[in-house]
Image (cartoon, rainbow, N blue to C red; front, side):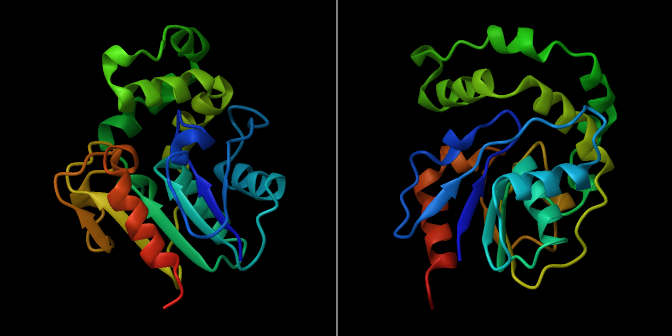
Amino acid sequence: MTVHLLPGIGGTEDLFRDYDFPFPVRRLGFIPPDSIDAPFESYAQAFARHHQIAPGDTLIGMSLGGMIAAEISKHLPIRKLILISSGTQSHHIHPALRAISPTARFLPFKHLQSLAYPTSLFGPIRAHMLEMFRNSDPRFIAWACLQARTWTGLQHHPDLFQIHGTHDPVFPFDRQIPQIHHPIPNGDHIIALRQRPLINRILIEQLSPS
């Protein structure tokens, strides 16, 4: 079994760079979509092929990465699926974000990235986020913003585990209930960065042999 870590939109494989696991993991980066109109399903399948994700592997996805991991699990028998600050349906995303997502087709993401200077003045967490955003593929960001709202969702997975902050503004907590297995009190959307030691420990507990 291989454990694959998928970041969120605007993130890179560096999202989990400070995590420490007692077993091998693969930190995956997003690949460019064929076009901004590429269906969510076809992108997830291309992503799985590119990274050689195999039956029996485990996927851990944060935010948009969790949605892609969930979509992959519909086509490959994934052993365990762990979602962090994510959801199993497109309507789990905040309605306002879904409503404005069509504007992604016209936003100058490459220009916005050029303005994202990671500086210590913002603190280490924000600097880390800006660094990842600056290094992300603008084609992928535009595609993800546009296509996430059309995702058909995941109905069931036999070994699904969700970690979610109770104050997540992107995937509001009350839209996820009753699926959340491990709520993080007062946690926001970036608990994977803000509460790294806690999330790291939960992941190790979930993946270690019982």
